[in-house]
Image (cartoon, rainbow, N blue to C red; front, side, top):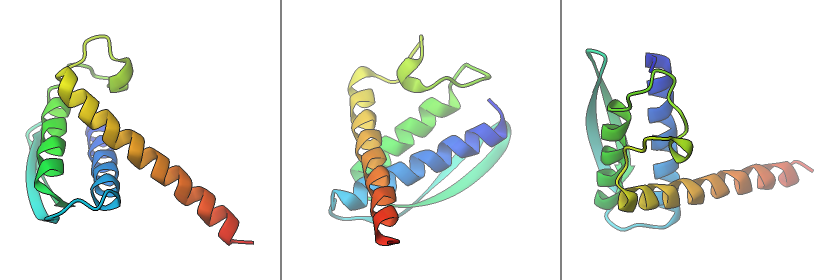
Length: 114
C-alpha cells in the first residue's frame, strides 16, 4: 500500500469515527493521541473520541498496518479479511452510521441553498 493510500485510509477512519462518536453522543469524549508506524515513518494523530471508539479505531489502524495487499481492497469485499468477525460488525456499524450522516448533510446543504 502506498503512503498516500495509507494516509487517506487513516483520514477516512478518523472522519467516520468522529461523526459516529459525536453523533451518537457518547459520554466521556476526550482528546486522545495515537502514533502509527508505517513504512519506517511515524504518524501522530489526535482524536476527539470516547474510550470505546478510540479502542476500536486503534484496532482498525492495527489491521490497516498489517494489510498484505499492495492495492488495498475494500475490507467488506476482501477475500482474506483480517478483522475478527465481532470487531468487523462494530466497525461496519460505525461506517454505516457515519456514511448515512454524511449523505444527509449533503442533502441538507443542497436544500438550504435555495
